[in-house]
Length: 146
Image (tube, rainbow, N blue to C red):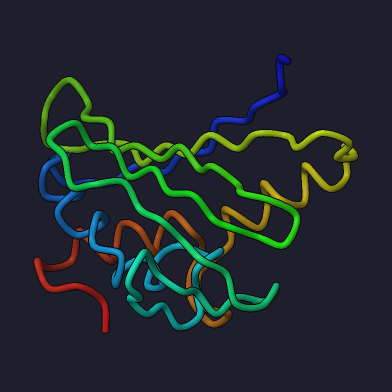
């Protein structure tokens, strides 16, 4: 089955390894990922996220050297796999954070577009646009956002 996919990305003005170091930590996801903007706590076999859709289980990929930040979110409708990568640019001083959003079976054009907008929105209501969050979280200092 061939599913439609949308590539969503933001530029980060830091080397990929440095960006990955901050982004790979599950406890940092609520600081920059709109879908996991609520409380996130570690449990025995994964993480529990408090989201607008309720309490969801999240499983993150293992730490790696390839920039892979994939995670799976277990929802009442089934598991949603989220491919997410830190991709270095050729000059080495910056990178792209790239998420692939797949259209779920039966999803309308409107809902697919709304999901893409939701992924790109700020993690906090009062926060600047998504790209600014990722940039600020990594670029301003080596310390993560509070």
